Picture 1: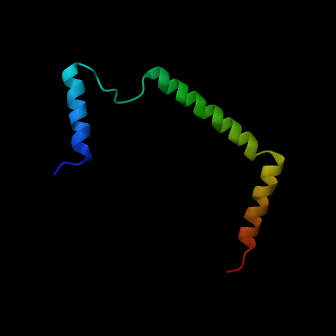
Picture 2: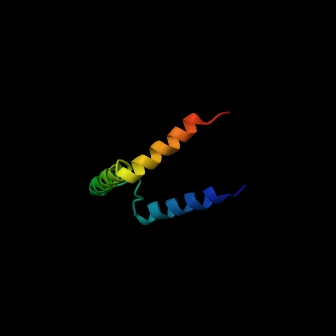
Picture 3: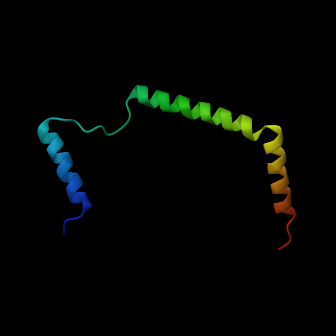
Length: 70
């Protein structure tokens, strides 16, 4: 039975025979840049969520959910 996996394995085998390495993960520089970008995004999201209007809206939604009768 030939599935999608057979095509992938054949492609990897072809790259190995050709002498080209397959990159299994991020390089150190790429890892550092992605980590920095994630930290910056987290800081921006924290500022937005702890801001006045968003914080009030979240409190309102949570208050209504906790006060709901089942």
